[in-house]
Image (cartoon, rainbow, N blue to C red; front, side):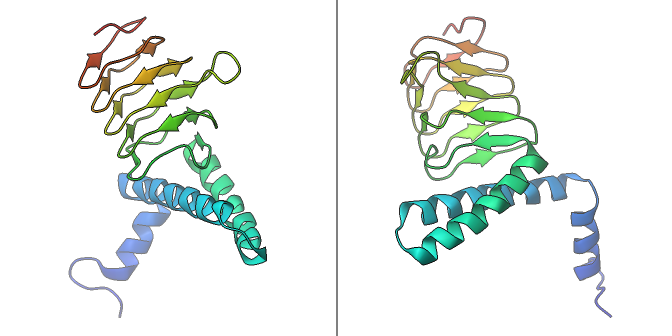
Length: 166
């Protein structure tokens, strides 16, 4: 009845229920949507927004548990791209620019009070990268896998190593 030659509704529901890359992307998309809804209702005032903020916060916690992401609201600019499951930790005071790409194992944290990273637009942060301290990363930079960034990175640079070198 619902099934067509290309699979149809039944195949789509089965792919979401099972563990495959399509269902992984669905959970990641739901996490980002929930995070954006929490941000929207957090930034607006009124009883209606407070109630919906609580609802979306519960959904965000659920998807955070499923995906392993811990990204605080109002830290990321528009166009956040996350490819894979895995832990991603972003400090609540850090600032990520527009169209940043995060992969699994990324940690963005602080060393001392109010010393957090500021990341520019169109930055790609690869698997296992750690960015800590009062660091500024320029636009269009690439942080290679398993890199520890403790110093500023200029725009359009690629850094790798422990500690990071251009």
